[in-house]
Image (tube, rainbow, N blue to C red; front, side):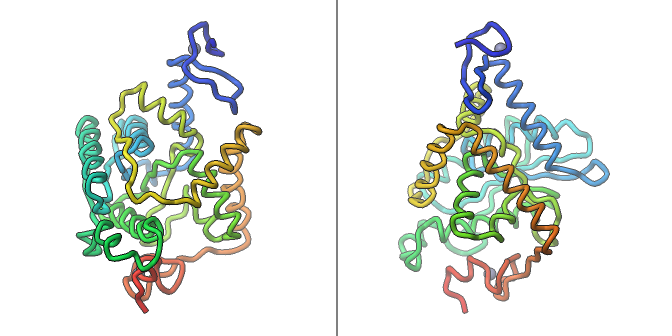
Length: 302
Ligand SMILES: [Zn+2]
Ligand SMILES: [Zn+2]
């Protein structure tokens, strides 16, 4: 298999592009795609600002930090920082925090840890032992993590917070929201442009690149990342959507990207029709689309 652009041996075949690429043309293409996303999604006022990367230590967020640092880090008036949310999962998060620290120090990026124990006075290990109020671990953890991502970005005065979502993640979320008929959730997906007070806009620089590409890029660039899985990962539902999406993509290459693009298009169309508003949780005051935020609802607050 030869590269479509030169005579070298290819390292990857991308069905949706209908081409194979050698190492240097693959990385060149990858970086061009990320650069375009960064340019489209991030607009600093007066060309100065701050962006924080939510760094779990996994391949996606590690590549996101590496890319954002190399694209924006050189700009004079732009500061790139990173943080890791510590859910309190022994044997898993403690390891990936170390990996995250190493990556940040090698890139010269400030790194902070924000933890469930410090903010919510609990850990995921404790929650699991306590029985999770009968919910799945991810249903409890997700809203807490989202709040801490926002809080950490807010604390550092960031204009944007970057997440590691790739085109596989985006397509899965789109289909999940569509199949639930949840239009509000669909249009609230990142990337966000408008800044709502108290809610830092989330951006997704890797949204047009597949999981395979992100993994290969991480390996070729030797970007340190942790490949461990959360021991509580039990999103049977997401796994079903993953396999359905993979089957669709195999038969109709480009479907994943198309779903991500459609989400952005739907949002544009809806925004012309209705104003989206974010309120605050009556109990804890965090940004919330309903009277009580998901964290307070999950903890049984009235
Ligand atoms: Zn080539
Ligand atoms: Zn709340």
